[in-house]
Image (cartoon, rainbow, N blue to C red):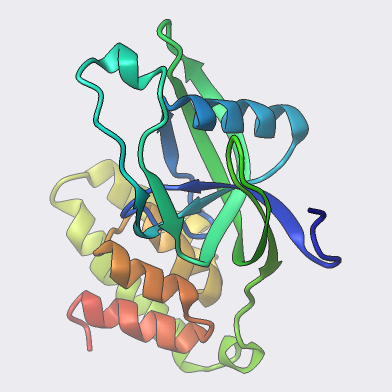
Length: 218
């Protein structure tokens, strides 16, 4: 099946309890044959990889007893959430036993429209998910961003002073509220279903307000 016009085609990598946001770089530890092929193909072909939290297990095979058996067999098949993020994949290392350590530089939020390919891994056609334009201009956004960032630095400082110092740098200070509301998840983690809800929120003010609430600021 060919993708619909005006859609972007991405390879789907569903991972339970992992929600990726634009501006973040999630690591991947890939051992299943189908997903090793997915990563290799996407790197070779320049196709984006979509990292998706999952709704439920569709198929759960018997768990291999030995690690080497897991490298030769595909494991559980999951139903993904229909809103996820995608970006370019880079291989960091291929281990002697064939596992792949990779990163995905997430750049886009997408919504699944249709499946283009099902085997050996899924390729799906998607449309971009954009924020509501009016919410980008809300004067409250900058105040929320400042409150959240001050709290984030406070939380980080006790365990990682170096990271706390980096958070005070221009790379973070100069982010727009919309950019910040995504990139904060390079440092901060909530329960996966909460993060999925934030990913799907298309109002910047509502997203920042929800983050502030999770941090006990509102």
